[in-house]
Length: 212
Length: 98
Image (cartoon, rainbow over all chains, first blue to last red; front, top):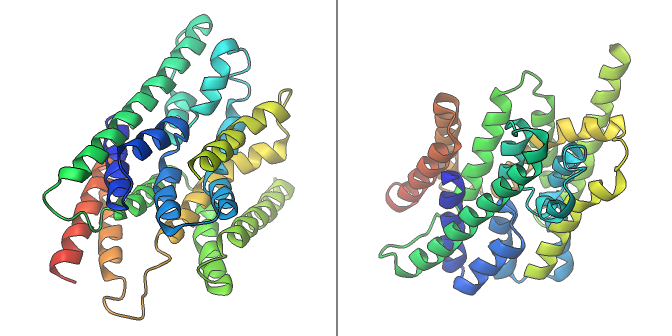
């Protein structure tokens, strides 16, 4: 919760420092609602990326949401009228809260999940708006604020690393991407990296499956 | 552009609900387990892609701030603290030392 406010504020400041004001911050947080993608989106907007690049990058950065949704398919099955919003609001934070948070009894579960999702988005929008306003009045330069995105992923990477003993996926992600960066260059490495990672992990998975 | 980002994001979130409403194939569940840490690793590299390690300051601000994040996260297990401190360290480093 506090996390969303702070990260949202960081996003708002970053967006403002790229030259996009309050309406942009609000619209992005209200309609996209994807933390890390919005950070990446600031770069896309200010860099004047094409719509195709935007779509592809969004696909790459948010492809992990496919897997959040996959693991929620059963849980959201009977959510009825809450379902569309629940699906829309299934961010990293919402996912991590709902995948191990204990919902109250079944009848209340969908309402509980709906409000967790909704409050999350409220914090996120509030943070973004706050950051956008703050970015306009801060007395010092905000150069370097973009490192908050890097820090966000490094922290998440460390957390994943500490919570498991199987480091093959994490290492595949790091090394595979690095290789693709060297092989394909700055502009085009994300898509090959994604394919390579999926391919290598599938191989490992098959070997493990055969061994057990 | 914002609309494109919003649409793609929502489609990604909705697709599995449309496709797998009966049961999830084992291969997909497997990917769901191993891909997240790998993609986070990919995004770490993505964020650092513009760092030039062959020219001063050789990526040192990123390295120091990045290692601080790792250290803090391992110590406190609090992402918020790690992210805030790492960003502040980075902002101070690029202003004063490098």
